Image 1 (cartoon, rainbow, N blue to C red):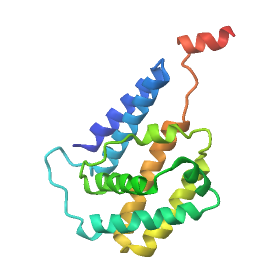
Image 2: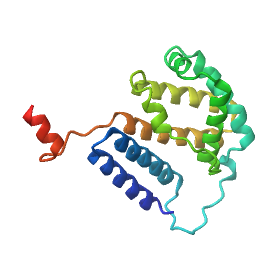
Image 3: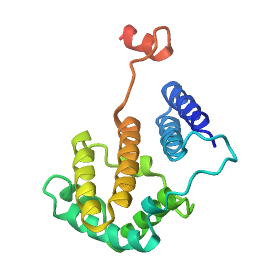
Length: 191
């Protein structure tokens, strides 16, 4: 699909999230916005039905992902800033690594195997996750991908991770003040 289509869907989902009255609805719409952002990032601006040019030199394989994910998370677990957060959140590392390999397969290879909800998964830990932790995660991701993958593949994974990270940070931390005249704004001014 066309990139503009997905960006418009993202804007609409963000607007719906801002207008939502329940935290569950807000979470659902921000999750949709993140998914639409990922779709927009993966489109190349071509009209629907047009074939994208082959990018064989930057394509990652399932085998590369299966090798990369455990190596990367071994490094994450050793990190002083984000390691403790992961240690507290993950009880079954084998299951988690499989889930993340499936996630990256869906993102990079459009396999469609991942059925989870990254925003909801991160929202559960909002009390301990900070925006700086996303930056540290991306830094380690860049180090490990640069070490073990060909440069074009590493760059593609780093670019995608940065976009996903921005989408997650928006979903978790971005809150606009209530619009003037809205029920939420009236409640704030009445108190």
